Image 1 (cartoon, helix red, strand yellow):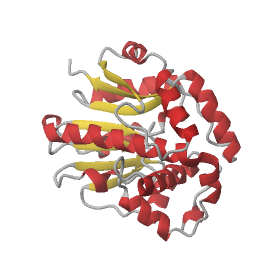
Image 2 (spheres, rainbow, N blue to C red):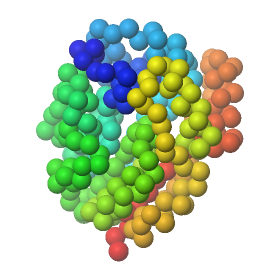
Image 3 (cartoon, rainbow, N blue to C red):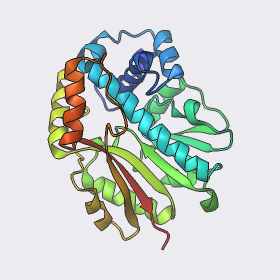
Length: 274
């Protein structure tokens, strides 16, 4: 089943965070316990050795930390809005719903048609966990979302916006702010310096179809994209995640450096209702 996807594509990167969450969870369940990812990996007829060799321990840890931060953000949101709509942009093989579902939220997985086809071979939809097979830039997906303003809506995106041009995101964020007033968006981003390093890693992995473009040095600049966009927070990537003595020394050093020079961060936006 896994062999259906083109590894020389952005969709091909779906396998990397899946591996990262599974391998990272097995060794660091106190950070993230992603049982579904672990089970999927065990059931896959695919050799993840090359991915493991390329991304290593540090790579696996970045994926579970990213998932943990997104989990925490969603849990905080649905504590206030128990019937919220959650839209996972560029969902890939994400398994967040299985970890945070409160029994009343409505969840949407948005990704390209071939990615959703691939996803469904491994993760089935359910009545409140529905896939939308469309491009993020095809705004017709707005009409596929069950949205009650009073119940709240949160958009999350993990490792996706890197692949787009800033001009594309500016147009989409502005359109989302107009259509979903009061909504929020939470995503990860790299600095310009970190983006260059990531592209070197991507080329090393052999995936020439997944070069990255978008970076965030100053998130406040996004408020200029639309009067409806407000930055709620920008947090360093590993904030609140204690390093472990069992980690390799190179991993512990990278964790410190990444936060020290702000290579990776999480940006939280709100679409103002005005």
